[in-house]
Length: 236
Image 1 (tube, rainbow, N blue to C red):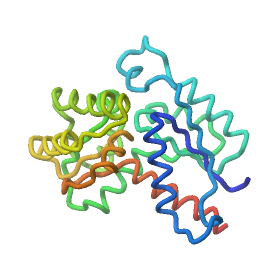
Image 2: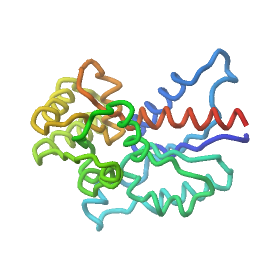
Image 3: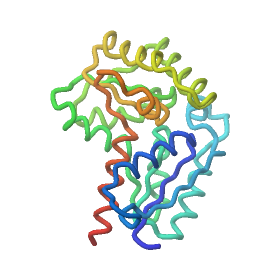
């Protein structure tokens, strides 16, 4: 197989499945051959990224991610995508080891705000504690002049409960809980838009989209960018 891309997934598996499902749904197709060529690496045993960022004595996911990059680079994909926001903490290290460009999900997500919500100025970030605390989105937002809004300690704990206990832990969705988190971020944080900076939150959005809150879904952005790049490969 030539002119394909590699998806580094399994962080978590249900979120990776959601990425692939949306990728296939959005790909313009009338026959089998119209779909995209890609490889999915569902490396479910990679240690939790947020746990490591909050406590560096815990298992480090970087060697696992580097192993995947190095193995897949032997196959010569045209580009990589990483279906996990928190894993982008290791982006520079991973890109240095990769044989092809890695799509930077946080960067692409912030770019999308400028077209989706052109008048937005205060941008909230929801995600794992590791993503929020370690500022995985901060540099990208600050570079284009956005005011960064982070959740209160209580709201962060509610978000972690939804991500780890409900979605990762039980593969279930409480739409009211998800919508209440968004409402708190918008009303109390006075946000013009809120980034869903965790692929489990993207999964929550897929499962419970019936709300009017201005969200920027990082995984949805990654899907669209993946399709755009892959179709350009096909044109060549």
